[in-house]
Length: 276
Image 1 (cartoon, rainbow, N blue to C red):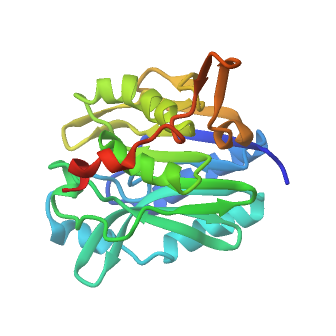
Image 2 (image 1 turned 60 degrees about the horizontal axis):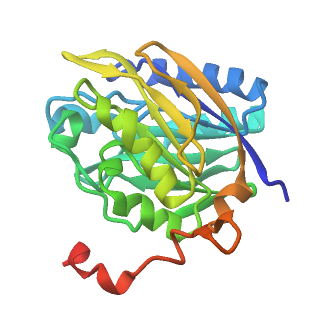
């Protein structure tokens, strides 16, 4: 068993409604990141499809099942390169459409997630809220949870994953202009309050009048920044994760005098209003 996970975050532009081009760019990026030793590479929200669709009928043709053709293509690249990937896409289920992401390895789809919290923006105006519980998936020795973009504004989403033992929470996102404070502050906070690694992977570029701000970052379980792209240009971030840091929740700063354990110190009996 290895306690180290090397990850990459690909801050990239995405072309609306051109899955073939986006998949080719994802494959190229995987070749680069795996060549640099990344065992897991995370891509932005809707990295396969684009985001700013103007109606459900416009978006539906770009949705697909999970697994489906796009996931199979990513899995083939992962098998060839010996790595894992998290990609964002639109998942179709009958007449319903979900903003989704999938954790994929050479063997295929390991797990998927449907975005639970939907802003009034882009394709999320027409997608269905996620209807599956938050879940943690194993990729090798690592335990990985997934949220998407606006989910990060709701601390319960990350906490559910941390309580299930996530080492890393991946957040594919499409933060546009106006979300600067989310990128600057919330990512670090979610990592610190849950004592997990947290990777926010945003896109860049302009789509139907919306500018995307980049500002991707990877934080360690103390909230410290391991890698960041504080700009709106394409970039690839790398970080080495010591999984034991996420699994050891008890922090002894001064023996017998200053000990922090944000899990042992929880008081769930007092949190009733959160779910009322």
